[in-house]
Length: 429
Image (cartoon, rainbow, N blue to C red):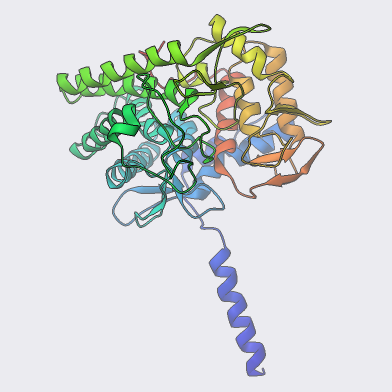
């Protein structure tokens, strides 16, 4: 064989190995749950099986005994995404192998938060991938640990290292209550020299970026404030019942109450058509935005994250606005209709928002309608993606995106198969 052909083949093999997906984990209980899942709708059956197994393809144990979960086609772990990607596995946590994986993921996230509480994504070797300060990235690991504890009764996750992560999260939230005076954080994507637009003191927690990784316009992002209230309630309970630290429990409770008060005073608007509704972002100076984003936490997700009851009148007013053409981020097409994101092409819909619409609905008709749209969004690989053209689902973003597939698994289990939802907190509502 001529050398130039041999060299070409060698380079080709190296390239293919470099881009080939990791084999991931094989957890027998998850594999069994997927392969044994039966549904008269064979398309749903196929999509559920693929969705449930998706996280096993993206997770791996690290040499230090922790576990790493990449987001999909980007080789990094987002604190938010990873927490959501493994959440359906809480339903199978009676399996010691699943519990071991969840404990290892929680342990790694504790290290991340200590390394940099302002970072939202990290690499397998603990380098910061992005330092976009997103308040929800501090809340997600707390709620995952709390949910694991309440589902399994296993408090072994609450190590001294975990408490240090809780300390770092609480200190960061307290500091960012008064961003202009107390914080040194800045980012090149934020206006005003990286510090963001001016805000007034509200009791809420300043955040630089949305869960979409886009910069906030006004830096009190109400969905993330809601989620922080839930996470701080979880932290209070952990500190009081597990670590027996009354001072830290009281500090978490105080901050949570201050944030809730700020939401009620500065994060709500009176609309002539819909009544009193939640704003998306506010600045505490009288300015606010009425919209939503598909990424979670969202306003639509308020009952799912544990902030509001599904029948709360203010939530229902907000929901009516969000799922209407009056919401600038709500789009309709021939195949689907729902909320998109300013992060992706205009008028494209996110499966995350569709699933969340179903999860937060008490209408069987609406739940089935959402499911029909999700099945119709399948471009042929039987997976959900980041966003898609509601007129042509074969046009989509993110070839490999784990989060919506995990949420879809949860949706099918809780909305159609009679499995009880696992809460993210108890004291929030």
